[in-house]
Length: 330
Ligand SMILES: [Mn+2]
Image (cartoon, protein in one colour):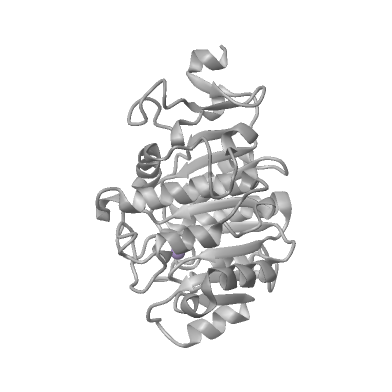
């Protein structure tokens, strides 16, 4: 079967691109992320997009299990051939594929985490990078486990309204609000290289911040963005991570509910989608080994606002990994 038989636009030799928007309108055809080829349609790839439709670790509004399909659907809005702000044609530079969804057991958190770990471990290596669409934030724990197996401990760059370093909920140790404490305890993170960005809202206790700091996290609170500006935030993140391999975790609730209403635990006073995209575009793409975009709960969304934000972030992370050109101007 040739590239043309699949209806895919050809880029560099051997690379199979997404279905062309001139051959099939963007609202039709393949339902993969930005209509990329499926994992089993190509012989090798550099970046895989994976769905983790699991929301059994959610503490408030449920529904993120429908996130991967909603984000793929919203990705039809994107024209993925060329990213002008990063000056890169990511799908011509690297082979990117959609690896489908992990079959997650909706009745067992631990079994679902094992399933995600197994899938991610199959897809990841030193030269295969992974971007996972959640699912609630619990899915980040098995993803970090598989990343650490390949790369060793990593620096976590974590965009979220919440710290996600609490200990337990109702006695449950692995939930969407406890994963990064578990990741620290399991030695998956490089100490003193990780950072939360965009946290805000009231806490269970002031002690939460003390404990979080004791796990080696720095914090840029959402309100600090007004003082630091985009460049100041980017500088703080880059200084924090240094040359370490980065796992980038984006909880869509880092955005203000005005920009992302369709999520499980919304908090007022968040980032705008423009602020988030511009910060992301300032990150060192070469160091990104894996990423997730989580907590899209489509039942609470309106007009695909939240799903489109998540789809755009996934595409931007792909473009960052593919490498910015010489004219990039984030
Ligand atoms: Mn979170």
